[in-house]
Image (tube, rainbow, N blue to C red; front, side, top):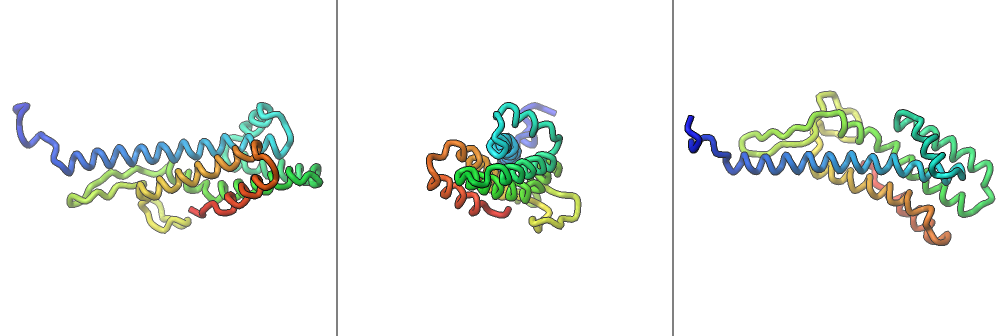
Length: 192
């Protein structure tokens, strides 16, 4: 086969498909990194909830080998802290924010698992790009379709990033008004 054979050159659709595929892989990578930011920010929440040095809190929280384990540990830390420091208004407000964020992260954990453990489909049918994350299993969660589009993946990333930013802003909040604003932002996090 000669090197200049016209049949070997990529068509416009082939080039578009490569671009869409790269964009989808980028979106998935950003979403997984966003989830990692959530898990990292939980150390800050655990440190604040238990009033423990951040390095120690991080080591203790990371001794759990799953998100579920970290979630339980943080819930127990929050419960203990509420008993010990319920008279500290700032502490109570911080804990409220962390509780809201932890609840939302727990709600979103299946999305992270879905992104991490399902197949990336970059197929094209009849010249129409149909890429996305495809689950070979029956889907009984909040996502009713079996293919998650790149746009939906990007929405996950935005939500993941918003949650971790809220958690990380809490320790630096100046005054109860700022904490109340963060609490409102935490309550407005979407269900994805």
